[in-house]
Image (tube, rainbow, N blue to C red; front, side, top):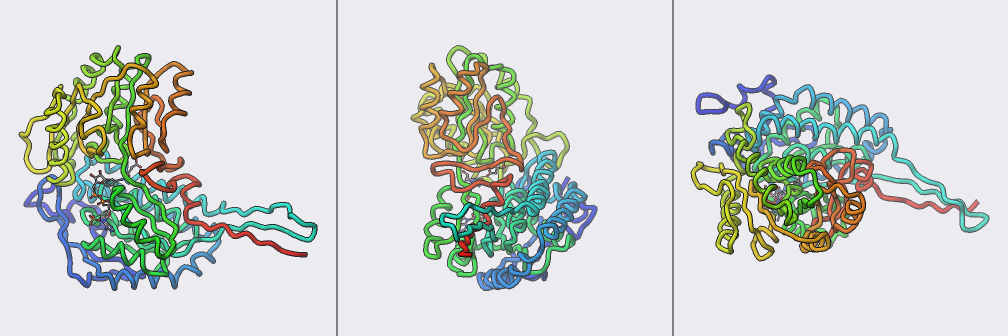
Length: 490
Ligand SMILES: NC(=O)C1=CN([C@@H]2O[C@H](COP(=O)(O)OP(=O)(O)OC[C@H]3O[C@@H](n4cnc5c(N)ncnc54)[C@H](OP(=O)(O)O)[C@@H]3O)[C@@H](O)[C@H]2O)C=CC1
Ligand SMILES: O=C(O)CCCC(=O)O
């Protein structure tokens, strides 16, 4: 536990993993703008002060990345893979310390932080393995004297902006494939969660990632850093995870340099339960999908659609399971729901609850206002309709709104009635229905009879306003490569 008598460093087996300086061009440096506070959302107290990098320092990191890139790309795939493998191993060796740092700054329960570290490390492992398989192609020539070859080359310097909800894996899901492809990387972590990012840099340095190839530049001034990333001509790739609103700003800014962009943006995931579903399995899937990270993921079920015939039974079973979830400080073993990231996040969930109840929804469970600070009781609402804010906005919190539907066509139409298209889920048994629904959902990801779809081996990403590009698997590496076509006359 972290309290007034215990400091964060003393909880770590390797105290050097608590790194408060920025990592730029192989050096640990103070911020030119001083330092900013990092707080523990469970208690609200300051647990560290982290270097606040200036725009000039970020430009320096980009210069270093640019200078290092050709040599990094000249390493063989096998050499890059060996370094990435070592980084992966170090992450797993230090899984417990990295998990403690994550829970301390982000709030998620330790068990989830351990899981996220393994998930984050897996992106480094998988991408490293892919470094050996960046193949080209030969194409039969279009004329007798022509030979056509296609090679893949790294884009160049990649700049990354990541959110607080997955402080480690959102960075490794970008840095792993970038480095595997032969790009160099400058990452600006969310200001709420820089400690997970600097700890990754400590381990990258120990793994032998050369100076300049990876820099981590915490900063409290996100928009200035975003502008540097978009306006600096040495950056050729922008990779972002966060809200659709900020994604739009970055895309507009990146247009001037015609920069390659990957955008992993907001979601409004439907979770559909058909009347032929295994209801107990659907309840477990809903718990996993809805309450992972206390509802703060862009793939969390945001709208739960239940077919009329099983609506009341599903609501009852779900409420029973939600009642069992233990809320508390994520550093306490056994806690399943930590605090939300801050009190602003609590306010947004509360607004969704009040909006829904004012328009006729009923509270099945939760809804109380009796917990302090960033804590919130999980809530289940019944009688939710498309007119309520929860139908169109990402709640990003522990609120399960239950909508009722009658037919399969209606469920697909309701699920697709959104500007977003990231993850979707449904539970059913009939194989024809399963085929029709998985094809009808306008989403980048469909979970069929499962509430957990995240893995480093598969392409993660959205359609519509949920983003551009894919992360994970070999698709993730492709995003950091350019295709060069060579036409040779012989
Ligand atoms: N797709 C996803 O995974 C995520 C979706 N969201 C959605 O967005 C909502 C708001 O969350 P929030 O964390 O504020 O998400 P944001 O999109 O605001 O933040 C994501 C990252 O972008 C940075 N950022 C913010 N504005 C700019 C800018 N103008 N230029 C460059 N970088 C910028 C943030 O910095 P800083 O940390 O300093 O604010 C953070 O690092 C959530 O409630 C949720 O609905 C949020 C996080 C992740
Ligand atoms: O909210 C996000 O964007 C992170 C998704 C985490 C995951 O990979 O499941």
